[in-house]
Image (cartoon, rainbow, N blue to C red; front, side, top):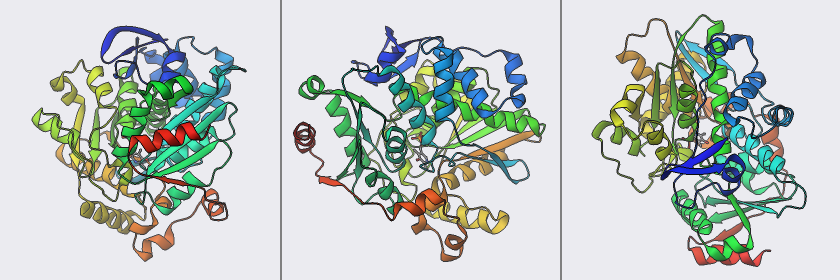
Length: 436
Ligand SMILES: *Cc1c(COP(=O)(O)O)cnc(C)c1O
């Protein structure tokens, strides 16, 4: 499997190099040279396969020999070892629950697969891998747990001080071993900018083997296609053939993976890009003008992104043709107030508790289903995180009903270690150089 850059279609880089370097020199994003179209029989028979079986077939086609079958099988068995159930909420409306992994967010899929792919390529004696990851909340936890204890790796997590939830903060700061946490006095965009700058700093590049674990890494995109296929398989079992996916979106990695699955032959009727007030993409789809903005803070903080890093990938999938893109992608944006109302409404009407990100997906789906004839269509909104990660936003009545998974209860007894830094690059660089 070879990769090209969204800034240079003629570049050819092996998968392994793309995984370790994360970003091409030209600051584009890596894309697969060939997007395989899966056998229509396999798609028709998806309902016969389990999630790990689907994951193996899909990644095998995509990787095209970059990892031998037996090793790939082992990576899948270790990484994709939890469920992604489709749960019915009301007539035609379903939720795809992606929060059953160790960090209770969908990013476990990407992070667990990526860490094991890297471990596979990290032959003994290779230089230690330094993973820098900026997180608005969930990525850090998923990456930390994905890499925890993996030999020859060191993970540095940057998160915006005071802008992640208490549970998220515990997940980021209580790992120890090869994981360290930095709280940055700034926004998520500041964290992301620091990481990007580190990658372009020649002194740091000479000293360390730097890589990113953010959703821009191609090895995180691939495993996020698995659950779209697997959701379709579950809906087939209920007699559906038409599906609409509504995806709560921030950096657009999750929905980008869905669109990649569609390019691979998954029959999807429509994708809904559901955002909070950070509506750069919905307004682009409407006006044709892509205007990145500073991010605004909302209740759905993992989606507080003003310039989505994966957007160029989606444009690349459509050769930058907005008209073609609009045939399959619709954008919606919602306020915090609407989000809280949606949480109350779905709890009252259906007894289901959604995290604030998930609620935005639900609203977009309801709106699209109202505006279209959808008799035999299954509407699916993605639940990107477990509601217990955001306790502050729920009323006491709802909060009492949330079941806290065991892995979260244990965090309170662990020791928290974190270093505070400003948002200037020099302090960050000094910290990185000083610690080795
Ligand atoms: C990361 C995240 C999102 C946004 O996903 P993207 O791939 O960045 O669009 C949505 N919800 C939750 C809970 C997240 O952690």
